[in-house]
Image (cartoon, one colour):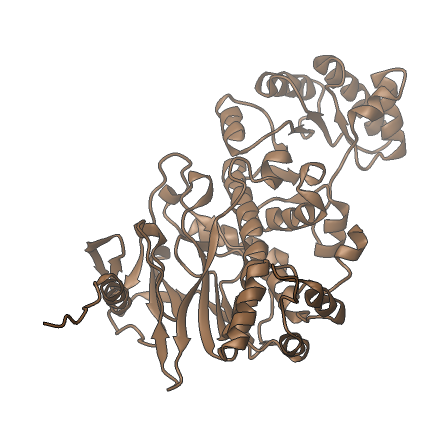
Amino acid sequence: MINKLYDTSLSLLTDLYQLTMAYGYFKSGKAEQEAVFNLYFRKHPFQGGFTVACGLSSVIDYLNEYRISDSDLTYLGSLTGSDGKPLFTQDFLEYLRTMEFRCDVEAVPEGTVVFPNEPLLRIKGPILQCQLLETPLLNLINFQTLIATKAARMRLVAEKDLLLEFGLRRAQGPDGGMTASRAAYIGGFDATSNVLAGKLYGIPVRGTHAHSWVMSFDSELESFETYAQMMPNNVTLLVDTYDTIQGVKNAIKVGEQLRARGYDLGGIRLDSGDLAYLSIEARKLLDEAGFKNTNIVASNDLDEHIMASLKNQGAKINVWGVGTKLVTAFDQPALGGVYKLAAICTRENHWEYKLKLSEQAVKVSTPGIQQVRRYCENGSYIADMIFNEETPPPAEPTMVDPYDFTRRSTFASSLSYEDLLVPVFRQGKLVYELPGVEEARKRVQNQLASFHGGIKRFVNPHTFPVGLERQLFDLKTDLIFQLRSPKKVAVNE
């Protein structure tokens, strides 16, 4: 069954209510009405101060192959309502059969550092098509953005140490494992143990051996010697199967044998116990034996907080193997991205702006055909301003904090800036040359280096200034007042 899952049309990778709404648009004559939707998130994951956008590659693959197959239509035709009659009529199914994807898509490039309420994707096109894309786009962006962000946090802690992703066996299924490997690499990891990810994405692969290898021999030393005999150019030995300190001493013996053959001991791996203490003792033994360049690899349910603690304790670890808590995004399993209607085109070819109200201010959506402008001063990013492309900002725009209208900033015309959303599809045709994973990976590090260090703190991070251009703020405010104003009712005297 698993092979069939990825060898079929993925158009039904959606929630049923997307299809019932699409059916409603079709039957009410609204299917072709132009609309704009924005995909964004409301809160940084992991109580952090930044998020790394990821998943655009999967979005492009999905949209390039978007089709509703005959088998999809047969299945949809078999669905019934509460009366036992077909849920969808044949004319609707025929519409889906001949439908061609023709939306415009704008997106921030993979590896871009982003903030709450900024659109990561903007979809413009027939409302029926935009609606069908909501669930798959959120599925593709939410998880990968989460993992890339987690990886970037670990890279901040590791600094120049090597980071290895070991999470496939603990990932949420094959797709979770594959996308996590790619997103982790973009976020800052150096290699993965996932061989299929290495093949498909061009990510470096790394791996050694498990405890079962050691246990299958009569002695730990024999297992080390055999492994080194077979693969002298890839020797990192797992030393904690029995007694860790003795394991290090056995690894040193094998390292001496390797040197006699012209090779070197690449590393030892610690997978349990007091990693700070054991790594310090192991480093002493290795250095005294002349193995100063041998790496000390640590694994065992690591995350950015444990890594930071180990570094504070003076641990002598310089390679980190991270699995479960990376690929499962511990301790926040979902990003919480949303997809909201922001504008709809009327019959007069005029954009009518839309807004979702809520009792919670953070859940009130923002109308408009949105773009994000990132301002830079002296090589550092200073603010992000969201504006409506239909009412471009003046030369010296004013940005308003949407949660405190008294907080305003005006940007000088001399400041440099970058508009983050770039064209990806035009009328359903791909117009974007997707950068490779190496370029996306570099973008993350280059961007983080250009932000104030406060946003990279794990405890009480600085809030980077993000706001609405004044015209957009006024538009949003006016719409809120209109929607909340009580309707006037005529009363007969």
